[in-house]
Image 1: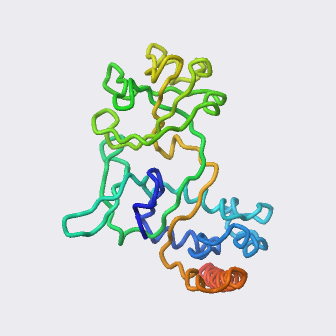
Image 2: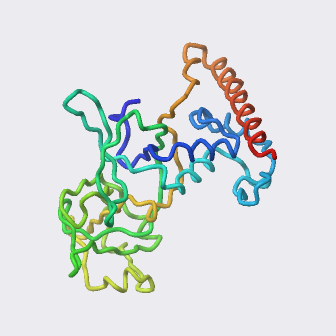
Length: 277
C-alpha cells in the first residue's frame, strides 16, 4: 500500500468493514476478485443465479454481472468510504491519509485515517457531474450573501466541452474541507439553463475569468454530485493474487483465475449456509 501513488479523489474504504464483508459475501464476490482483470471477473461470475432476496434486484440473472457493477454499488454505499485528499507523514514516521469526509455540523471536514484502518482503495477513472462552484480565480471562491459557496448546474454540452485542469485544496471558508477539480470552459460554450433551481437562484452571480474568453470553475468531490462512469481497484486487503507474480504471464493468468474461482465458490457456499433456516 503506497498512498503517494493514489490520486486525489480516490475512494478510501475505512469505515463499517462488517457491512463491506456481508455485502460482498451476499453477492458471492471475494475481495480478491476486485483486483483481477475484468474479463476474468466476468468469466467467473457470468453464471450467477438470481438472488433469493427480493431487494437484490441489481444482481438478478438478467443483469450482466461485471466488475464495474460491484464498483458502482460500492460507490453508492458512501457510509463506507471517504475521498482521499493527500498523504501525511507523522512525527513518529508513520504514514496516514488525509481524507475529506462528512462534517458533524455541515459540509466537509478533513480527517486523518491510519493506513491500518484501510481495507480497500478504488479510483474513479472517469466521471460526469451535476454542478460546480463559481470561483474568482484558482484560489478564491465566490461567496453568496449568506457566506456560502455559489453553485450552478451546467448543461450536458458545457460539461462535455469543459477541460479538467488540476486539483484544488481550499484552506479558507466557505470551501475549506472539500476537495475540488478545476475546470475551464470557453465562454461561448457555457450554458446554465434557468430551468434548474441552482441556476435560477444564483443568476446574479458571474464566474471568474481565467483569460479572455475562458471561464474557470471548481467541481466539488461529493457523492451527491459525481456521476461515475468507470472505476479501477488500487489496493485491497487480503489480496492473494500477487503470489503468482513470478510465473509467466499466460500461466499467471490461469492460476489467478483458478485461485479466484476457488475463493468465490467458498464465499458462495458460506453465503448460502448463512441464509439457510
